[in-house]
Image (cartoon, rainbow, N blue to C red):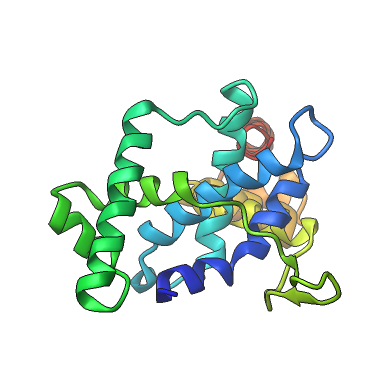
Length: 217
């Protein structure tokens, strides 16, 4: 198994944690999980470790974004005909590469061989990827194999998502949230710290909270 696939599987706990947030909202859990896996693959392929933050911090909003897209699209993971055809071509190319080289190709290698962008190769891989169960029964039906992953609970996922969205605010708005909700300052005390009026803090705080609710809904 390629290193990329191993690392993705080691983070499947994030997908389950995110999918659980949306249970009971009219879409089967398996579909929520499948959409989350799409997000996990996208997050892995676009993550830049040089930026200094953890993969999970980057991945959770991407996973949640894909799950939310599922609701916007009416509850189905839609796959275009072109992507399905590309998936078949990628599968054949992978098989041919393995025969010739004795190993699986990387996304970059497939991209160069096929003349297709790496992002499209990743999406094509995901089309043919079956949802992976964390519980597998052997042929005799009496053993269980658990993938060794840490599954963060829902509250941890929400905190990570919130921290990510706060980090994306402009500097003044971040300071307002920090002083009000992390330092427990009153609006008047926050206003003095930021050289603003209490009314300005109140209005700005309402807008920030509304923005965060929309992003985390």
